[in-house]
Amino acid sequence: MNRAGDLLKPIIKNLGIEDNLRLAEIKKDWNNLFKDPLSFHMFPSKLSAGEILINVDSAVWLQELNYYRDDIAKKLSKYGVKEARLRLGRVLRNTKPEVKSQKLKRLSTQEISYINEVVFKIHDPDLRETVKKALEKAIALKKTKIRFD
Figure 1 (cartoon, helix red, strand yellow):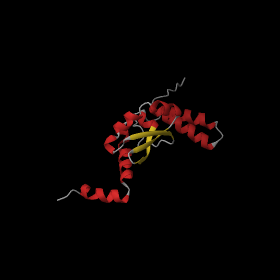
Figure 2 (cartoon, helix red, strand yellow):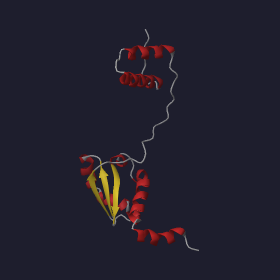
Figure 3 (cartoon, helix red, strand yellow):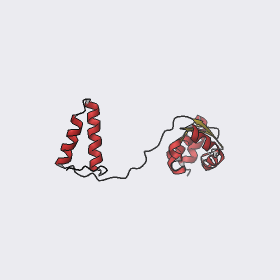
Figure 4 (tube, helix red, strand yellow):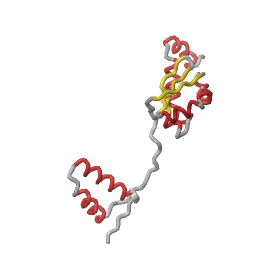
């Protein structure tokens, strides 16, 4: 019996999608390969003939990461990467950073009244709604304390 992967390898190679599959695997594993802040400032863009092209989101990070190109390539060698090139470009992120779940407290009648008084003075309806939601969340997360004297 042959493994399915062994049977698919020649087909994938003949179709010319071997690099695309490897790139997809690198993208999937990116956050495990490179921890933040690195994973938030660089992301793979293209893989071709063992050379990976990595987008970097700022000139400062690009300059810094150029010193580590060989280390990056070495870390990606298990995916068939032999060389890494870096360029300024759009950085896509696999996932948003994890946010700790926070308990929201229930707003008191006084707090709701206070919020309504503050937003009542705002004429723009979109801005009024944005400020209202921000105040509600800030108070509910206990990040803002309101004194009622």
